[in-house]
Every structure is written in structure tokens, then in C-alpha cells.
Image (tube, rainbow, N blue to C red; front, side, top):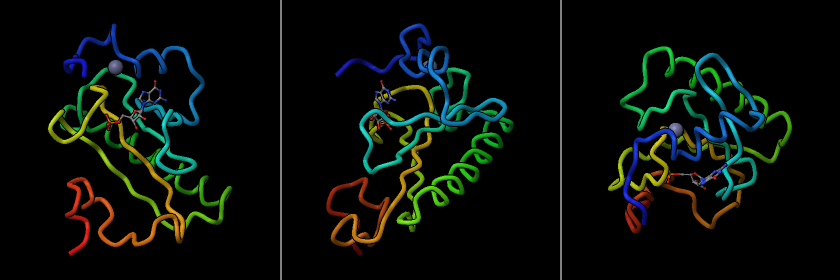
Length: 132
Ligand code: 5GP
Ligand code: ZN
């Protein structure tokens, strides 16, 4: 596992922002498909600026990310009516599971029956703690 870096020159997401077409973009933020999606349509919303985590974002970056979350939710549901819910998640820090140290918000579409028992959702960040 490589050590966490905040060097934007080595950052895969900075490279994507510089060279790939976004699924959507708004102001200071950019959205693209996750390369290893948890479900079909899994997107990542990132600030264009290399900022390591959510707590480093400016108010404008948070506002623009929120706009994209709403816009993309709408677009996904219109395109795919099988989507009946979403998980929104941010891993902040190595110990919280973060692997790419350029802030990103996971937007994960959910569908009825996509797992045996969805109860607890993001509580599953600690295996075995999802149900309560
Ligand atoms: P984290 O664990 O840091 O919250 O999530 C990093 C996410 O980035 C993972 O869901 C992973 O699939 C995604 N990812 C890793 N490398 C790449 C890449 O090169 N391109 C894209 N589009 N997504 C990536
Ligand atoms: Zn970066």
C-alpha cells in the first residue's frame, strides 16, 4: 500500500480532471465514473483543486459538490428507474478507508434487492456493525 500523498503531481484524480471528459461539472467540482464501481452508475464527485479530504474543502467547493449530487441523482433516476436509493459516502483519512488522497464523494446508486439485506447501509464501514 503506497503511503498517503498530498502531492498533486502524483494524483490520479488530478490527472483525470486534467485529461478526461467529466460526466458532469459545476463550478469548482467535477464528476466521473468510479473505475471499480460498487454498483452500476457509481460516480465520484471531486473538487478540481487538489484537496485531500472533505474537511479541506472551501464553502464554494462544498456548494458545487452538493449541486452535482442533486443533479446527478436526478439524471441517474431518470435514466434508470430501477434506482430506488443512494448511498453518499466520503472516506476521510487512511484509517477511515481512504485510498486516493484527493477528496471524493461517492454517489452509489442502490436498487431493490441489490443485496440480501440493505439495513444499516453506511454503518457497514466497520464489518459486522451494519445491522443494529
Ligand atoms: P476511497 O477508498 O479513497 O474512498 O475510494 C477511491 C475510489 O477511487 C475507489 O472507489 C476506486 O474504485 C476509485 N479509483 C481508484 N483508482 C481509480 C482510477 O484510476 N480511476 C477512477 N475513475 N477511479 C479510481
Ligand atoms: Zn489530486
